[in-house]
Image (cartoon, rainbow, N blue to C red; front, side, top):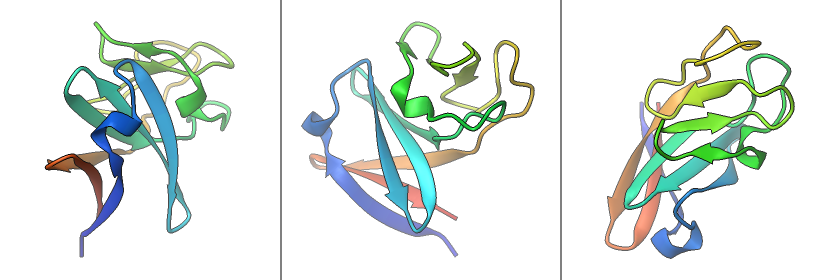
Length: 105
């Protein structure tokens, strides 16, 4: 069964930034690019570092792990470059009014 979690106001995340949330023991990085929001697992699949601390690559729609440089697609969670080879989970984001919500199955 899916659950929807109210995370924050849209303006709480700047465009080109990521923010970490912890939901029932699941770490999630929420990224804003202009008016689009994305949510992916916040742990790099290569070495377990927080992805929300990395750089947002706006044009590529990727989030870079700050430790070893792997980048992950915000749409699929798949790594775009080494050393990571395994994807991270992605989550649906719903924007209702000025609130950003994530859906976890």
